[in-house]
Image (cartoon, rainbow, N blue to C red; front, side, top):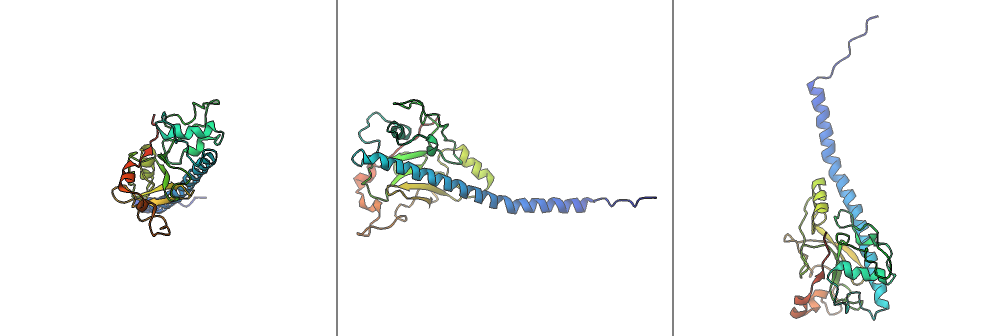
Amino acid sequence: MNEEPKEQWGCMQWGMLVACLLFSAWVVLPAFTRVSSRGDSMIGMNKCKQIILSLKQYSKDHDSAFPDHGKVAVHSSNEVFRELFKEGIVTDERIFGCPQSIFNPDNVIGDPPGFEKALQPGECHWMLLKGQSDVSHPETPLVIEKSLNSSWPPRWEVTSGSSLWMRSERVAKKGCSWPGGRILIGRVDGSVSMEKLRPDGTIDWHAYGTPGPDGKRWIDTLTPEQLSKLSYWDIEEK
């Protein structure tokens, strides 16, 4: 019995299939990237909260001071945060990393009492505002993501889109924002939020936070001299 000849796909059918696949990728990939970035940012937010809680635990035994108080020999946030290991407050250094970052620890912390292997260069994503304590203004931006500079005001490279390429750019560079031009900021009161950057890569500090009883936000309570002295402990790079 002779079989009927099978119908072959022509250029038009193959072209329509390719067009459908490309359209599906164009629709699905950005949505997937947004969902993935949102999940990663939540992980980063939780890590930042753990760091602040650890700093507060340290302050309870040190007259409200944070680990950089009186430490003349420290030069980076890596060294300041290492004090938390020496106090037995932190035992897992992975809280100092963040998804989509090139600065992530390997969780090899070394031996007591010095824990010299904890937070080696390239293993800390977070910067710490110098000279603060647990009784500083509650909305002081205490812990921030790696910025391009350690002086005040901190500045980041704005990543405006949400493509996979922009996500990989954040991973590859220091000081890149999350897609959409946002950055994680942790405050003295333990709150952590994703805050929008201005086009120049800085934050409008007057726009965030709740005014106090006097109607002022934390930055409005500082004198020009105090503002000029603000700076962050920078991270150590490899």
